[in-house]
Length: 114
Image (tube, rainbow, N blue to C red; front, top):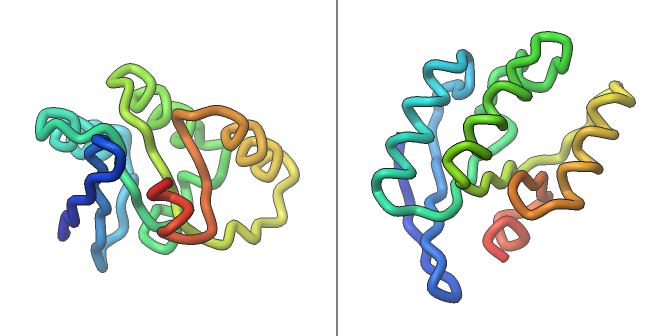
């Protein structure tokens, strides 16, 4: 895993690049969130291609549990990807998340950094 730090408008943002799959378990995600939080970052950017498919299967409740951890730590999350899924409930979830400021699904890194 590689962390790339960005600072935009006095906001500390960290971009995670990896060849590994992330968010496979709640415990793994909690460790990552804690690491980012304690390093003083305000926002984490990850890529859809690196996220476990279970995260995007809302029946597993993995996404909800992980995103609740982000809310608990008041840490923003941006997921960058194409999000071409056949699930209406997932599309609705992404749409609703993008209405807020805490969890966002973006198509490019530039949009995620804003």
